[in-house]
Image (cartoon, rainbow, N blue to C red; front, side, top):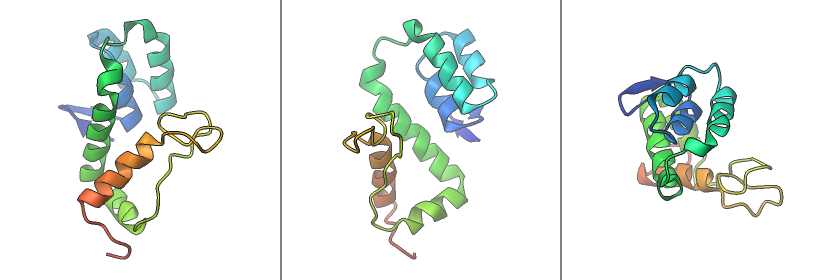
Length: 127
């Protein structure tokens, strides 16, 4: 569960997928979907209705959601702290934007967001 922009979302995936839309009916369908995977499939189904400036703000939105998730879950803070200075990689062989991609040459934006937040919090190994 992550509380973001005044709403409780079942997962960060739900929040991120819903943020792509300004149609309240689509947002509600995504919000109440049973899983992150279902939320993603719904977003793909409504792809033609994604807000026009999505590509300009998707990194900021993801960072907001991850930041909220981190602030609300001490267990995640603990796990992030335990990574020390290690590079964090979103292990997605199919996503070259958020993850490593099929050839490990992906942009890894999700990993970069987690490392940025870790650095902001001053987490060091074992502290």
